[in-house]
Length: 564
Image 1 (spheres, rainbow, N blue to C red):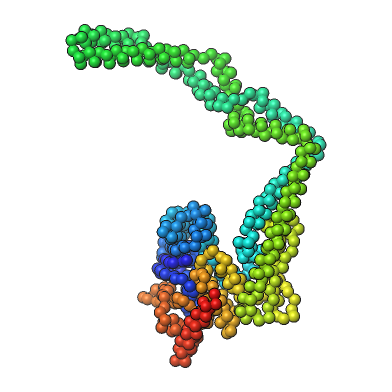
Image 2: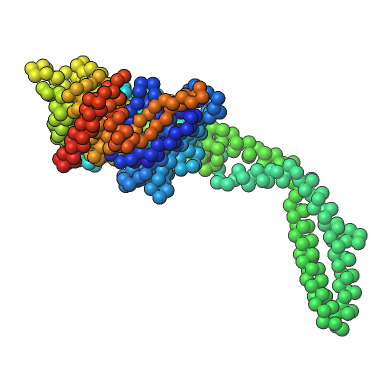
């Protein structure tokens, strides 16, 4: 769940910190107090775009940090797949925003904004004022249906997706391979030319590296040889060379070696040095002889390197890549030379893959339709509880024109608002307020299916009042029984249901206006309800109504918990 929100230097917020809790967290406040800034801050921490004007005037940066406490094993597993590991069950997402750039972190480690968004999708679901508009697009309806049926269709859906990709690959290969005879002949000639060119080169793995080393030696042969023979002169052949001087030293020391044990040991060491120097001189002389190259040898090496480098520019950066390319082209030649048989075999494989895909898609569709029947019943019941008394809700299925990774089903939510009216797509009959309630009904049904523990609703009460508002408040409380819910509202009926009630307000001190948020106790919560109910003038009657509303809400929540 969302445990903590820390915001600094954003709009009217100087610095606030909020501790959220389990159940239904309600945020209320006067219009313009900054409720939208609170939700906007959460969105910013989750990777939403921002404009530099969001920064508090005079501030160099804005900062948002949200901390989640995780207990859901599925959430933890999904985060680990993103290489995000909760620390003692805690995950912290933060974002520091400066003019023109921002820095995002997860558990203190800097991450790209894309990863922040992926983590957010696992941790929290935000239902903003306009999110219900997504119900107008039928492409989203299949996703909702499959999310409900996830446990029942997961195996079949994965199998269908796998078979679809295999079928598409075969179909693409078949389409690309079906060319006319003239094109095949032209391609065959070109492939044979390439293969012959590579074969004629008789390439050997590692040959290029050997030749490059040899060429460097050849190009610098005189410099290398001069150094070698100069060193050889100092150690072996020149006047007063090291070998001759060492021999004199050995003779001088040999006369004393028989009289003293230490001198004898030093004599032995010097003899070993002389032996090593002789070996060194022999190797140096042999190496010097190898540094003598003819112009013809240099020419041949240079030509061979040019030949190899020419092939590299055409077929691969390494000899191994060139040989692999040659092998691939040889296989292609074999296919073209046996074109008819290959096309027949590929067509057979493609038909077989399509049959397997069709079988899997039909199986998936059958299970999906069964689950969709359960879903539409639950949604319809939920809509009736939200004051759609004569509603009919149907998940309509049509078969797609072609196979997709999701199978062969195209889904559309259809609804009839009144008895006797035909079912029609949501986009044709539902108003904004109705869509909001439909989305709430769907969220309520999905609540027990969803791994996301925290749901945020931003003014879901827009366009509703009276009995409908009471029904919405009960739905919110019901979701709060299984998820953490954070809800911004203007309605007393919804606010009365709060397990934890927060007030957002503007405070002006010394000419500076700031947004503040505070957790209310029971008395303060009743006073806030009275403010919402009474408007400008809060009478004793309004206060009694607020207390009664709060008391009735507590009783209603107890009964809702008892019906779970």
